[in-house]
Image (cartoon, rainbow, N blue to C red; front, side, top):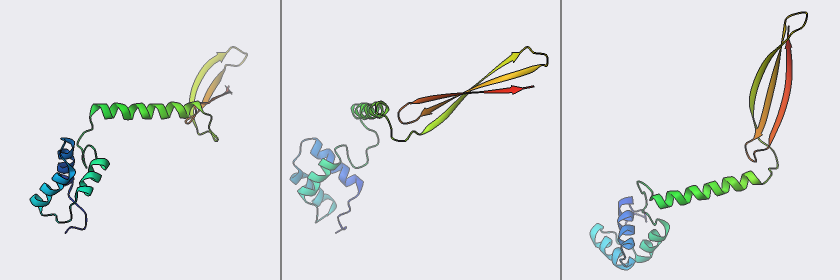
Length: 134
C-alpha cells in the first residue's frame, strides 16, 4: 500500500506493544486493522522490535544506555592512547619564559618551550628555543 515505508508513529507503537509482552502477530493484526496497512506482517513487526528496541525515533535514551555508551567510548579512547600510532598527529602548546641577563648592553632573552603532543597516542615531544633581544 505504501511501498513498505511506515510512519515512525506506527513503528513506535508496534515496538512499544511488543515491549509490553504482546505477540508480534497480534500487534501486526491490530495495526493492520487500525491503519489499513495490508502488507504489514508479523515478521516486519518482529524486525522492528529487533532493530529499534527503544522505538524508531526515541526522544531520549534511558540513563542505563547512556552510561553504557560512555563506558564503551572511554574504553576505546584508553585503548587507542595505549598503543603507539603509525603517524603522529601533533598539536603545539607553547610556553614563553622571559628572563633578563645583566651584561654591558641591556638585553633580554626569551626562552620558548614548545611541546608537541600527539592527539592519537599522547606522545610528547618538547622543543626549546632561545631568542636574544638586544
